[in-house]
Image (cartoon, rainbow, N blue to C red; front, side, top):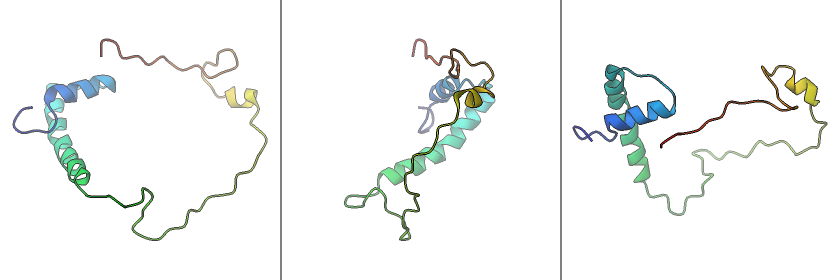
Length: 102
């Protein structure tokens, strides 16, 4: 990593490639600078001792506002697919997402 940065320029480029975002070299450098404080904050949070703290702990005592489970009629398949750009065989068609040479 260059200059004590938590994320290298190559890592920024790699994440951008995974997200299919084209970045100029100036943008790569700028994003490295912007991501470093975020990663510093995550590291600080990781250092906090949370032993014995329930995973659902809130600052304020908040009851869970959940509705009761109820069985309801399903949406008709033709209605659900009516807005799909290109349904296939009665289902939503989505592009394949593959990482090649990862």
